[in-house]
Length: 202
Image (cartoon, rainbow, N blue to C red; front, top):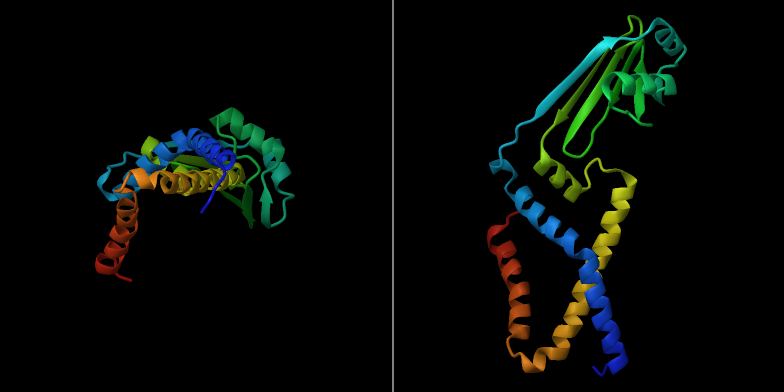
């Protein structure tokens, strides 16, 4: 395969740019790959925080008009919860059912939930934090991370593909002077294939 010198320069440029852009992400994903693989061996110490109270009468009365079903929290209730707990439930959709309100608040590294008895105005918010490793693991999986992080994961994966393909082209270019190149590349294919065939069962 004949490639011009100008095209080789483009390959080298794309390789170092993609490696620079993806460097920190690749390190984090490699490290969290290890922590995910040994998740059962890493002891977690969840921290549970709880807030509770009674809604002011005007705020409780404003919730009475809400129909049963799924809908975001009213702005007044969100602002009240932020003042009382420091937690912003955002625009997530809550379940309204026969005088009760329930809102699930999953997030990376933990979760939370809100329950409101509209008739009495009593409410309870519970938040669980599972630590930094759980947070990083959830970022790795894209669990409860939202649309922006999902887009980042796709773009990051594309950058890794560019890095690998340009690296393969560079291996091809310099393989003549490094006779171990293709045997090592072959090992990178054969070893996981053998492990899958011999030790991984459906």
